[in-house]
Amino acid sequence: MDPEVKIEPRDAELTSLLDAIYHAYHYDFRSYSEASLLRRLRNALLYFKVPSLSRLQDKLLHEPAMFTELLRFLTVQVSDMFRDPVYFKALRETIVPYLRTYASLKLWVAGCATGEEAYSLAIMLEEEGLLDRSMIYATDINPEALRVAQEGVFETDRLVRFSENYRLSGGKKSLSDYYAAAYGGAVMDRRLKKAIVFSDHSLATDHAFAEAQLVSCRNVLIYFQRDLQERALTVLTASLCRKGFLGLGSKETLRFTTLAARYQECDPEARIYQLL
Image 1 (cartoon, rainbow, N blue to C red):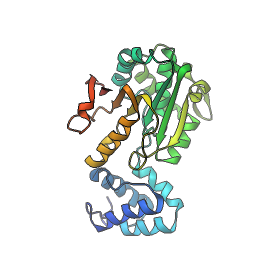
Image 2 (spheres, rainbow, N blue to C red):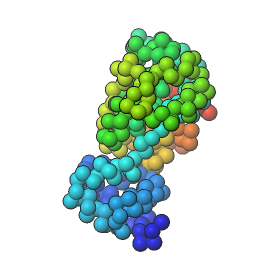
Image 3 (cartoon, rainbow, N blue to C red):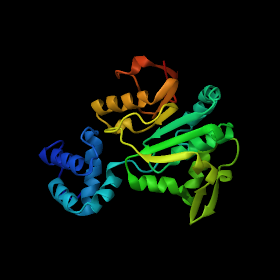
């Protein structure tokens, strides 16, 4: 790292920057993991060529367009289709039989980044004969990521990894059945897009999104401090119907949280829980 770029954990500059972002742009990163913030802000300082957080704060307050760029560093933007195939295989084999009992389905992908997980769920539902009665709500705090997700165009060099994940997750066809080559990339099928609503939502400041049978919030909580984890889990829980399912990331758990007693573990390896 450039020796002139210095960040001290939770010092006055960092606190001031996060407060300024919250009050000026209404994005709340004040309870995000310190280690994650430091790592991301170091990269941001180098990218913007500023030596300190106070200088970054000054530029942000005088150049609002710069904040959109900063969001690229403060939020997770890229995932993979069928990331962690064990999770999608468990959904297909264990959770789908429950989902079949509903006349209509709502699913929420919280922290959808550029949409890979939402499209993966849509493909799984299509193969299980459930897409026609399903609506997938995919939310994120980054408007640029949501724009990319809504376009549904992914780089062709990512398709080999996507396809392997799809195969390992129990896919029944070829992933190529769900996209067409265009715009220098792979464009997801229009039928999948119609089943997904992309929208802005913050687990740090917003409330319950919709009453859903499945809420998938993976690899999001690990970036939060304990108090924000509890808040986020409260919002996710309030968004589930009775006996609904919550999917977390492979490094996340409900254990040791205040909401643990409200769930039973459906699949420990896949980190899928059912609301009691």
